[in-house]
Image (cartoon, rainbow, N blue to C red; front, side, top):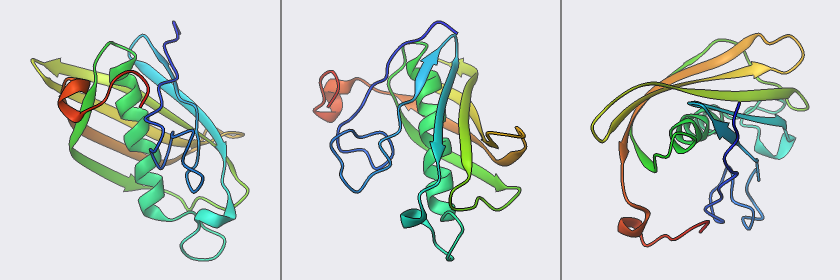
Length: 144
């Protein structure tokens, strides 16, 4: 994988380096793919001992975003669908991987999986449509 990144919007709940409440993941991206590794922190559980489903989708959303970013796209989520396949436990090492599934003009089709780091079992999978935007449209420059 030819790597680009990591990019950080600083305040992002998933990858923001300056968000003290965030996960602070570092996604690496290139060649239409992305990857980040994380050990589930119990502070982010919904049901005690299990990662909150919304955060699972957030991990997948960022994995998809980074896959487009690795191809030079700067996007925003337009639509995302997630399928939860197995519970994600506190203390579990996981890997979020994303990939570009296609592109038509400004619309990117992306996919991602959250996998158990040891067994590679798929814990959750998502697909999404993302709209390419200019960072300046959002008042962002570089890694903000």
